[in-house]
View 1: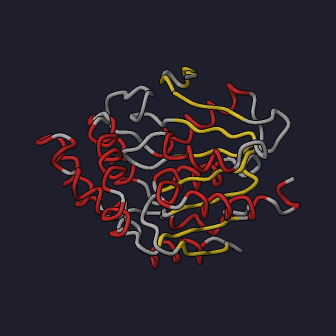
View 2: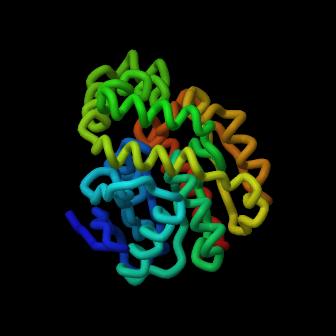
Length: 264
């Protein structure tokens, strides 16, 4: 396990792969940690220098008090890259990780070579939705929302056919830091990049799970439509976190996209 203190926040991260290979960063979703990328990273081993990290409030990273903003998350990732001596990168982000990736591409376009945006959006719901979720956690902890979250994360087929895996991911969610989760809900409540998407200039691949109930296909498609030149593809049968349900398919899509000459 590797840690670095960035902007006063301890960030847990994992950096693997050949030092001279192109760098691929993975940014995880709300209520998860870097382990959601394990199977994808195993498929891509040896081809890229890969960085996965627990954003603030998640996994083994610190969960500072107070609401987190999207600029907080972007500054954390920027600081981590600087700490590791990494320059330009491709970023693969899912859900809020995709929002962080969009923020990086808008704030530091010279640093981002490619984007892979999985099951994400430029804006997630409205303030009432997130304030309600924050209140539910304050009253009943992570268990108060766990079942509903699992239904939004995973496809019905996954939930029916892989009950033990479902139970394990539910355990991960239940053991998440409730305060850090709520503080990150505030990020999703307050962030809206919709008006800025036209400024994203790097090659972008946008992916949607066909069974995603959290960011439905048409919402993700609208993101792709708003980003100039972005490609859009659907992962059939996948829910909100394709790196868990269909890591081989996701790894193949990533590899094909990054294989093109523009990535180097």
